[in-house]
Image (cartoon, rainbow over all chains, first blue to last red; front, side, top):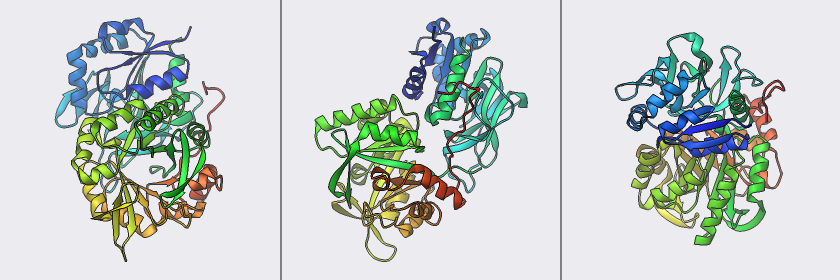
Length: 205
Length: 264
């Protein structure tokens, strides 16, 4: 039986491309807006584009924040993408300090920019910090597609699964137990991104 | 490793077919749009651009349908444009599967449209298309309505102003070079790339892999848009990337995915 994957819709995600990629891979993916529905799924994906504080306000207001914490505690695979990964951390420093879901300890900080263009848009390479089920079959230094101006930093370096440099080294992928995140967009990274998503879908059993 | 320089095949779409002309005129058929999109994805394109050149409402619906079908199967960034006159138009293309939307003529008459789309959907999805023609040394004029109408605007000033208003990228086409395959307008590209703080996609004139290398290197462009060279199979994306890598430009190679993983 194909894994049932919830794609969390809180009004701030690029939900369509994530759903399309999961369906393409044979997963039974569905958009989920109601927090009480989440528990019916084997796995969950939190997409996201936009601002940290706005996303957290929406997750809190809809009750999805609590539902995601429960889902993470249930040991089922949870994947945050881009802003959806950032909100898994403790704190966001984007226009003030905002508490995140605090499932993985860490902060989200602005990229330094300097003489580099921001946002960081395009294909950049990801170096795996350690082997993982998510990265199985995908070599270190494979390119993935990024679109962001803020970056995640783990408090415990063991949670960092992959890193990328753009002015400084930041967490391109994170993992603590069943909770995973990618700063890049696997659903927009061609064959490498599909391979990573297929690895995630396979975790659902 | 710095950001990879991107190769973006551009599909000008009319009634589901890809067409290509010279300096925006004399269109000839270059194949089925969905088929070409799949081919370029398989060959290693970093992104795809779709331009709707239909003039009718029926044609617009065909275009949106095409975009949606491509987005079901192609998982790289998709840029779409043509006839975008409002934030709602942009929303329609984004819902159909586009990640970015190009705005051209409407932004010249209503520059605030760039800010509106940026506020609603984020500036990362706003691409200003500038069609420019040479008007003397280091002077280029912006044209609208498919390159037919002069505006009196200076292309460099307009690109810089648009970036300040909310454009996240500039798609810069040299009308003089378009479809002629004699090389990009390197001077235009470099002057605009130095004037704006956002990525510049160079378009118009690619006739060989070395033209692409030149515009991404000396021209200072972040991405190269190509049509004729690829549509008519004069070069492959792999050949372009080999030439880019040989010139020391950062490229996204084809991923070497292992057989041990869940590779599709």
